[in-house]
Image (tube, rainbow, N blue to C red):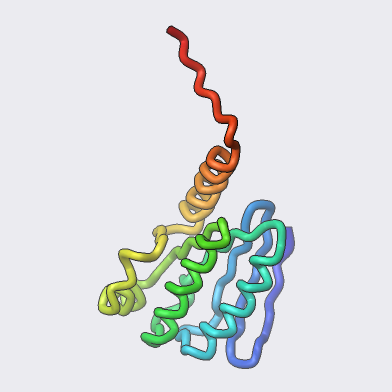
Length: 142
């Protein structure tokens, strides 16, 4: 496990890599479209790794541009298309309202806490393992 603070062109983020997932936490209070595009690039790199799951912790974020919210929703879909998890946690009320206004909130995999996001990632991992195993045998004690 290691934690890295990265300063990108316009977005400073904290990246914390664990065994089953990577947590990405933006440091800025507002996410702009160009920042979300940078986040997309970072996540493309994560999707190339063995541990592909991402938790996006938005605790420090108090505002998000509409275009950035739309890019994050597309990013989540990219992860699920790649058979990986993407969970967003610790959304502040103003960001939640922005997502709701854009009708994105119900499409996103959101949890109140990072701990609950970890649980979702682990459950989805187990589900993928079970679905990938074509030889699933259920024990029926009749």
